[in-house]
Image (tube, rainbow over all chains, first blue to last red; front, side, top):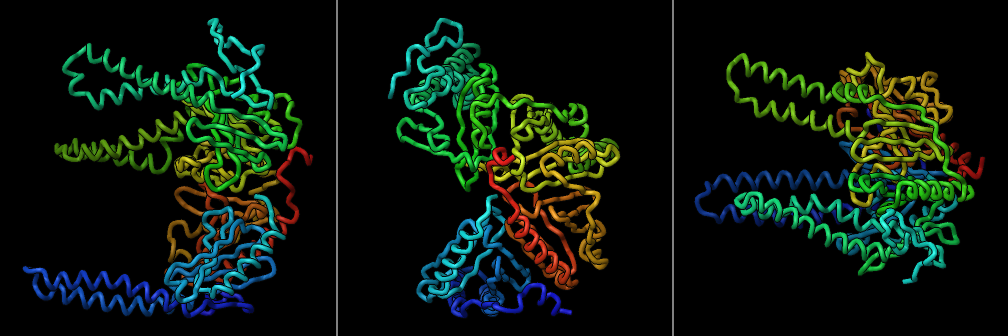
Length: 166
Length: 463
C-alpha cells in the first residue's frame, strides 16, 4: 500500500532530483555544528568533580545522533525533487513529513536564488518561489548554479506570460 | 515651502484663530492635513506623559501629596507641548495629493524627507478611524493600504471627519476607475449586530465558556474544602476570559454592515470607531465559525482574508479580519453572498475523508470533508467548533499536499489551498492519499481555468 503515497507525492515524467553535492554541503554544516558539541564534551572531561561516566555517556549519545543525522541528511536530500509542468511547478520534499507544493507560474511574485558560503564553495544553489500567500513555501535547494539560473529565468518568463492579479 | 493662497485661509474652530494652510492646495494641487493635528497629537500624549512621570518619580510624588499631582499634570503638559511642537513641524512638512498619473502621493518627514507614491490600482482598503483623542476634536485618521509585502500603508493624521470621508470616497472612486468627483457613495445598512447578542455570543465562545466553568469549579471546590490555595488560579482562569470578552465587546460594539457602491462598508467600535470598506472582488477567502454553544441560536462568525490586511501591517501587529462578529446563519450567508456572489453552500457535494480517519482524528474525523463547484473550493473541519472555509478557485495562490507520519501509516494526506495572509486557512484534512492528490491536481486546473476568466482590478469601470 505504501506505493499509493509514493504516487500521491510524485509526478511520472520530467521529475528532477537535486544535486548530491547538497548532501556534502549539509554534512559539512553538520560537522561544523558538531565541533561545538565536541568542545562541550571536552570541557566535561576536563572539569573537576564530574563523574567520569557523564562525559562518556554524552559522547556516546552525540556519536549516535551524529550517525543518525548523517544518514538522515542523505535521505532528506534525495527526497527533494521538482517537475515543470505546462502551467505549474511541482516541488516535493520530506521523509517523515512529506510535502508536495504545486505553484502555478501565473501566481509567482518573486523568484529568489541564494547560496551560502559552503553552498557556493561546493556549487549548490537554492531557488525559492514566493506567491502572495505566506504559506506557499516552495524552495528547491541543491541546484547547480547554472541550472538554478536557467530555472529562475524560465520561471520568471513563464510568470510574466501568465501573470494574474490577486 | 510654498505659501498657501491667503483667500483660502479658514477659521475652522470659530475662535477667530487664523490657521495657515487649512483646506488649501498649493499650485501643484498638494493638500495639507488639518492644522489642529498637532494639538490632537499633543492631547493624546497628555495622559501618557502623566503616567510616565508618575511611574518614574512615583515615590517622591506620593510623599508630596497634592503638590505632586500638580507637578505630574504640569509635567504631562510639558510633554504634550513638546509633542505638539514636534507634530507642528511634521504637519508643516506633510503634503498629500493625487498626481497626474492617478497615483496617491504623500511627502513627509522633518529631518528625513520621505516621498511615497501609492498606486491606486493596487488599493486594498481605505479606513477612516477615530481614536479617542481625535474623537474629542471630531477629527479622524485615514489609512490607505495598497497590496505589497511591507510598509504598504500610509496613515494621514488628522483630517476632520467630513474631510476624511471625502478623501476616502475620492480614493475609492479613483481606484475603481470612476470619476473622482463622484458624490459620496450612499450607504444602505444591511445588518446591525445588537449589543446583547454580541455580549452573549462572546461569553459562549468555547474557550471562554470552558475557562469560566473551570473558574466556577475551582471556586466551588475551594469553598467546600475550605482551602483557598487555588484562588490565585481562579483569578487567572476567570480574569483572562473576562478581559478578552470586554476587549472584543469594545472593539466590535455596534457592528454595522452597509452596502455602498464601493463595496461593503463595516463600522464598529465603542471607544475607537472604525470604518472598513471591503471592495467586491478583494475578498480572498472566508471562514464560517460555529462554536458549540452558539448552535442553539444558529449563530455564526464570519472571518475573511483580504489581501494586504490581517497578515500584519507595517507595524507588525496581526489583526483578525471579521466580516461579522456574530449573526444568524441566514443573515451571514446573505452578507457572504454579497462578497462572493453566486455562492451556494447547500448545493456543495461534500467528499468526506475515508472511514479510517477516526484513528487519526477520533473527534472531528466524521466532519472532515472537501467540496467544490465551478467557482469555489470548500473544506470543513472541527466537531466542537465547526469551521467551514471557502476560497474561490481564482484566488488560490498555490496548492499543497502534506502528510505527517501518522497520516502516512493510514495512507492519508491533507490538501492545503494557500490564500493571502489572514485568519483563514483552507485545508482539507486527512483525505485518502490518492484522493488528496486528485483533489490537489484538479484544484490547480480549476484555479487556472478561473484565472483565465478573471478581469482587471478597476472593477467599477468594467460594469
